[in-house]
Length: 440
Image (cartoon, rainbow, N blue to C red; front, side, top):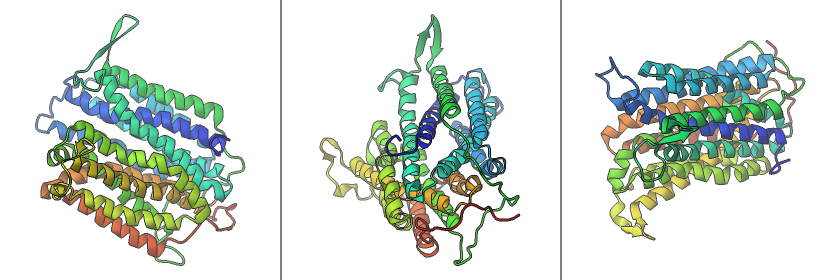
């Protein structure tokens, strides 16, 4: 047991850390790579570089999320979770290795699409394994907390490391060249190599330390997701999935608004990067204790409070520029309004932590044996769609005013609160029979 967690769950968490680190590298690398002139944009002169970059970044999330229900169900029916994860990591690693050979925009599009397919093979199946390893419901929230913590460490700190690797330092804006065995390797190629290494490390960890659970029951042929509940209007997993989509949209809107936020708050890129990372940092700090607390006190209280906190924490971010005259110009030597934004982003991160692990644990509580991939992919799919759509929504809505994207997400969070409060019941202490899958 590591950190009080099943060793297999910890191995999956470390594998996802390495995988997420490699994938998050590309979130920073690909926009710079496309804009660097190394990629031919012939025939695309009528489109802005920003739009072309946005399509590449969104494609991964849209394709990955669209396929997760099918890959989750397929892994349920085969019972071979490990094979799906390994196949996905191989696909992702090969695509990362081929980026230096891509010379056109369409080549980059094809490789990013291939990575989306690889991610769809790994994400819902990995989550399903964490759930199936949590045979005791009193450990499920804690296990998901540990898993999400390490995944978020990779996701949150990968972009920072990528920026340093490409430019060779914090202050430089020039792509560096490294000498490796007497051969010049650009910062871009070095970053792609790290993405490949992340996939390889994950591959080794899963191969050696992860096994398929024994005795899983084959799932039914029904690919549909339950929308309506038996004792209430909506199915609780569907409701948490909707809330997860709204939550992920709120996380993702901020990346698109960098120039607008910096201009409004009179700050530079460094403070923006801290603000962006604040949500992830709060998640890293609170995922495990909140997940374990949900095992003891239940999933529902954390979900309700999480969505109740999400709405005001996002809404207030939209009005920091309008009320910045009320804040000191500097606080401990830091731009006052920028520091207020950091605090609000941390608060948003706490709300996300209160939804993430308890939400996955709730879905795991309700997943019948042999159907973890299908049930939990509802949440992973919702999160992926939110991350993909958030930047696009922010880019459109900001034309109506700085606060508009934040108000939009706050309204969604309020709706998630109402749905969760009225439709989600407590699942942590259920003792139903989960050994049989429903009949076809």
